[in-house]
Length: 260
Image (cartoon, rainbow, N blue to C red; front, side, top):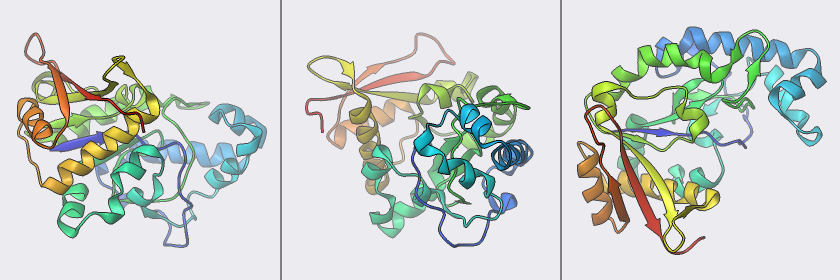
């Protein structure tokens, strides 16, 4: 099973660990594209601070993020699972998993990123600020920048098992499973049952809980249909929209009654 996650906008501090080593990251086929983004981002943020804030869409209160980006090559690096914070990651709570579940997380979770493309939760990265929606002056829109490298790397990473896609739309645009891979991909929406509406905070928290439940249970569904049964066994109320034809992803709606 491969689980695709969005990053968090806010991130924990880099800390004092060893600095970034691109060659140590998962999916080495993305390293050339990573270096291109990293190089331009560092140069941008080391130059005109106001221009950098404008490009990155940062408010005056987030001016410090520019300096953080300028120091990315020398900043301490920590496991991505510690860098990403926020609602989904609070609910997932990787640090409190038992040893077996942590090993499953290391094997199966990929976090998508405007800067790194995608990283595993044990990959060591510095704290940064660069969303997939950014348009760098030289490279252009990052979503477009990542499409070709991702298309060359992600199908192999997906292997022949289930792909559980929990990304937000901006990050989903960087790689869309196609053909046979799409047929074993499941996307998930979390809906407030009485209104059938998506609630953003609630959506993220529930997705974090779903991933935690799967890791803790040691579940290994082979495809979307098996995933539905596993989630129901774990106590989730799931409605399914199977694809109308081969090569299309499944859509799973997880219904919840309480917003918390």
